[in-house]
Image (tube, rainbow, N blue to C red):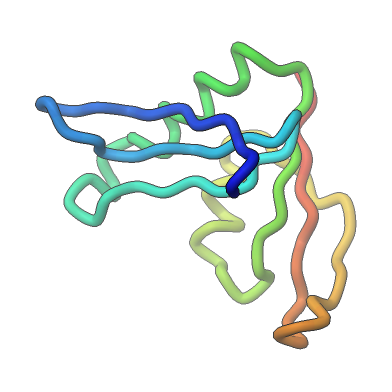
Length: 97
């Protein structure tokens, strides 16, 4: 994510989570362990939806929690690819306004 634009969520004066964007592509979204399950990730996604008409991301097929998180926020599976480094299936997901 070295060339990504970062958006940060602060709670009680500390960074609770952030998301890195490269154009319309979500390069990574991270929520501090203490704040997981508190809506920070959803808040970050909602913020991005205000700024973009289309969002894309890749998530490992085995990460069922992440797949569910994105599907619950309107992301659809576009295609599956095998990651050449890990041999695991990655899911390209997309959201359109």
